[in-house]
Length: 207
Image 1 (cartoon, one colour):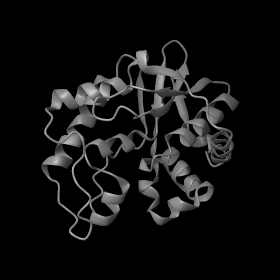
Image 2: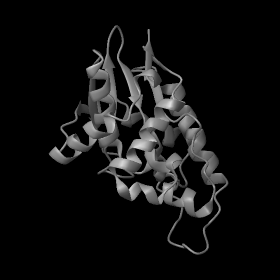
Image 3: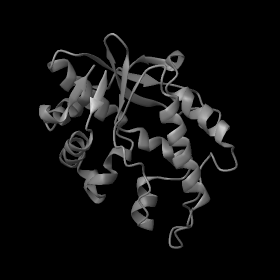
């Protein structure tokens, strides 16, 4: 299964986040999916897909990365002939390279990937991981400090090889680290509210 044409779908989520989370209004809409909202966004997507008859669930990955042992990440898995991953908030993982919404906003250098929502068949994620690694590497090699904010600096990936970075990204989407996401009552409520902003015409899953 594959998600077709993700731009309008991502835009629905960005607009909705500005409504359900007032603090996201401080940032341009295009940066909101990178703001540590993986749980709420994944609940919203899973809710929307379930209402349309898909076997979808929010999954939490706990990869216990050596560079950030407490790091967790939530995304959606759709069951069918193959298991499909939909990840609308993978941008947030780029803070391990130093690329965060705050940096992009303050530096006026939005170098996040053009693809807002990642979609791939579980077990076939390597091309996506390789692309994400290139983004992290390119950002670090072209890093420009924000003078008025000296505490902003490169992240935990600084000094690592591409293979080392890719290995750590790979652990995020390693099924051995998956479990069903059990959102808090508040996250579940906000996620369901966010689902109302998703236009069904903008979410096309095809075989």
